[in-house]
Structures are given as C-alpha cells and as structure tokens.
Image (cartoon, rainbow, N blue to C red):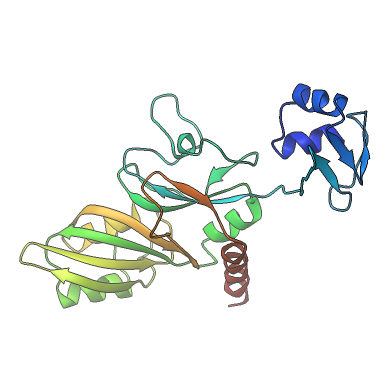
Length: 243
C-alpha cells in the first residue's frame, strides 16, 4: 500500500495534508523519516509513526449507536436526518447500518464497514436473535402469546418463525413485553402485534445476537465496539452456521 493512502485511510488527513506532513519529516517508517508519499509499505508489518506516535493499521470499524426516534436508518437522505448524520467523528470508510430500524423505533444499531459480518448477521439462514422492548395497546391473552411464540400470520407466504415472549406488565388496555425474533421481515414486530389484535406504541431494540445496548449510552450517542464484543459477534455467526 502507498504510504499516503495508508495515512489517509487512518484519518491522519487529506492527501495534501499527508504530503505536507511527510515534507515536514513528521512521518517515519520503521524508525526512518520518509520524504516520499508514494513509497510502498506493508501495512501489517511495517511500523509507521506520525508526530512520534505509532499508527496501527485498521480497515474494519464497528460502532454501537443508540438510535433515537426521528432519524431514518440510511447512509444518506436528501430530506430526512439519518443515523449516519449522528456519527460526527468516526474513522472508517463505507460505514453503514446493519439492518434497519423504523424512524420511530429506538435502540441498538450496529454501524460497520465489515461487509462479511453484516451479511452473516442479516442472513435469514443464520437466525440471529434480536430482542425488542415493546409497549402495546390491547390485551395479550395466553392464546395470543402462544401464537406469537409458535408462529403467527402477518400476511406473508409463511408464518413467522418461533419467537420468545417475556411479559413485563399488563393492564386492562395495554401490556409491555420483551419480544425476541430470529427474522428481519418488514415492520415485523409491529405486524406481529397487530396480528394478535394489538398495536405497538413504543419500540426499542435491546440486542442483536450477542451484542446488547450499552445502558450508559444516551440516545443519539455512539461508541466503538470492544474487542470482545466484536469477537463474540463473529463467533456467534460461526455457531449459527454450524447448526
């Protein structure tokens, strides 16, 4: 890889800024100051320093976003604010949300440029579990709960896959539950609730696979995933492949 491309990819600066840094002898490779931006380096073996600090190569990035209501899950939009507009100071090219949360839905959203992991997490064959906190109007009887858990008709060719329902509270006209599904159909949670005579009034995603929303992350805030969170996610998709 060319040295200037490496430095640009690592967010050191624009191509012209990187060239200026090299001209000022701020960049060294294996301890030797370099003068040419187009020298080739081995980004995985050579030690590159900028202003005395080592720059470790990284091309894949992972961020947890606490999506607020009112923004759409897209990389760009001409009319609506997007989740990517919230990530104002991040590294990584070609970042994109994994899956989609509706505009009025809050909660966990993974942002990454790891296309392989994205594909595995969204693949219908992987059955990656996603848990939602759901506030609903209506009444969820034992029979309706069994329908949600065993498979319900939401107007598609097939019934929904088996789901898990954990009831939190219920009154005469409303109920709150945690619903875990292993699919990602269009408006699936809302359609499942409607199929048993209810209506979703508030929806928040709590987890996706092994990744759970950080309780300390405010709405609209984000943070990089930890090394363990990334490893656990990748391992979970491998286990899903083996089933």
